[in-house]
Length: 247
Image (cartoon, rainbow, N blue to C red; front, side, top):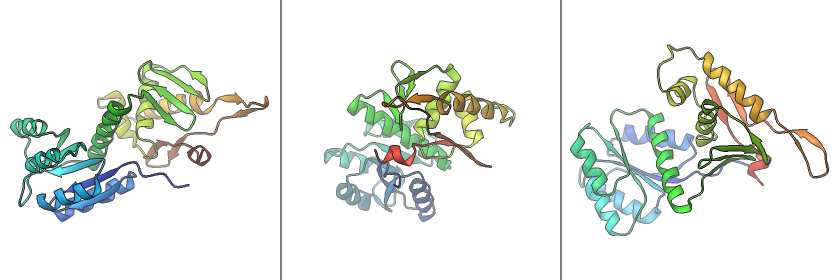
């Protein structure tokens, strides 16, 4: 069974090259994407598709992104907005948040950063709606309130760094994360390009998360299905096995 669409997104930018890059990156990340090249077109597309999130360029040829946001808010559309701005200007950022935006990315941007911001916004808004502190991948669960981790009902004891690494993987389920991305997010400073620390902590997680033995209802003991995968030469990812996805 293929991975379900994570969310629907409208991308608004008048530069075709930027639209194409964003569409390709977001499709790869599991999102359904619709595009618009102007402010007026954006309003029509947003009203029609009712997306989960809008990636919106501030500088558009007809109506600027701030005005687009005001208008859709007046129409009762509450989808979060991630602004793309060419200027790292405090006033622009304040204006964007004032009119109902949720975050911003300054051009030039990395595609990884845009995807990460989108997932952060979606998770934040999802939690506000459902107030569910549980992150799940298959039978693996993290409780964000208590920081408890369990798999198939068995508690897993993790160090603070192991917990942070596991949560980063689970927040990006189905997406390959490079060692550099993991270093930057989990340790938050430059380790001089030494990726051995990532390999070590992935190994620790595998032993604790994928090395469990569980007992079925009939008393049969079995090893859990591995969730953490290595993409040789690229990085690591976590995803539920197909049987768990279809459950």
